[in-house]
Amino acid sequence: MSPNPLSDISTWRFRASGLRGIPSICSAHPVVIEAAMRHAAKLDLPVLIEATCNQVNQDGGYTGMTPGDFRDFVETIARKVGFPFDRVVLGGDHLGPNPWKKLSASEAMDKARVMIGAFAKAGFTKLHLDTSMGCAGEPVALADALTAERAASLAAVAEAATRDAAVKPIYIVGTEVPIPGGAMEEIEELEVTRPEAARETIAVHREAFAKAGITDAFERAVGAVVQPGVEFGNHNVVAFDAEKAASLSAVLADLKGFVFEAHSTDYQTPEALKALVDNGFSILKVGPALTFALREALYGLDHIAEVLYAGRRKETLRATFERVMLAHPDNWAKYYFGTPDEQRLQRHFSYSDRIRYYWPEPEIARAAEELLALFGTATISETLISQYVRGVYEGVRRGRVEPTAHGLSLAMVDLVLEDYFKACL
Image 1: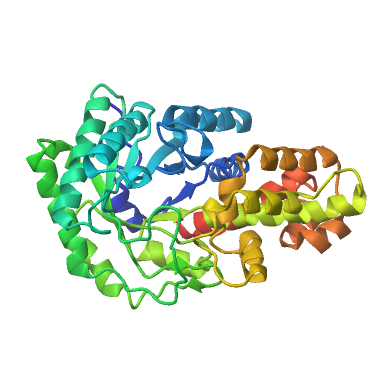
Image 2 (image 1 turned 90 degrees about the vertical axis):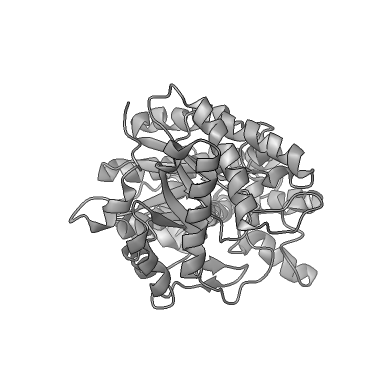
């Protein structure tokens, strides 16, 4: 049996060289995944790609993909890039009843068991168990013991599904973060997870796994999701403060084999990302910052297209987004507040990047394809790149970035990836 690539992650930060942590690429956008693979290939490193329960599940999620579909989707990109698929670690994030929490607990958990079985069978070998949310008729947040009991029931399904698998899954427990999809309100300041809460989370899950008869599975639990004090709202970012998280980090000395997983690390500075890894937050989740950068690239190309190809399209990509998002407000309306003008600004330029939910929409996908087709493989003028995609202008001038529409899109995403991979080395 092959060892799971993440099974010894708790030892990584003490290495003299090599990976000391790992970025977790939480996106279903093909350009983001391609950029991540290309960056990992340059460094001869593995890449961790995760899908949330809302993105991907047996009902299709908002991407329309099942876990098996997502695996095939990622494998297709790997073949295109020439990235060895055996160096791709697939993760399932927030696996639990969240997509069905309006149902009764028994119904929602039945759905969650089907989902985690599908993830496990499809070869996802990093599984985050998140059963902390209440279902119909329950409190919003559940007691630790009940959360752990439900998580163990999901792990039991995953264990059965991977009984004969070449690589056994590792588990992440805990969920001291906003629900999948992001915070529902503006974020000003955060309370760092209390050290005793982190210890309790791991202890109650260990006990629940034992009661479920899957003690061996808990030996493969390597991480706990905690709140290190990082988050972002629509307009602001709460920066990591290592001093405030020092007592939480110190707990890891007593938790042999465990690291902390940090969610919502998007938009942190390179220095903050490195400090997170140095302090034991070894798994750095990033998603919205990557699609935010991609949107910046495509909106820049949208402007360039209006300079070079005026009148060739019925409407711009941005206009298509605005029309589709207004017609289908479910993915942004409860997150964006203020006047109509303030909401319009947030729809397109919010850090929370709710626009990412609309990339799979057929009209949006066609508009993006039409935009890129206008350029094809043509070289784009450096002066237009300077004006509209300034972030990668220097890379173009130095010959490091291909001045094509696809090359600029990859390079904008790569600016974010660079910070994450550097922090983990």
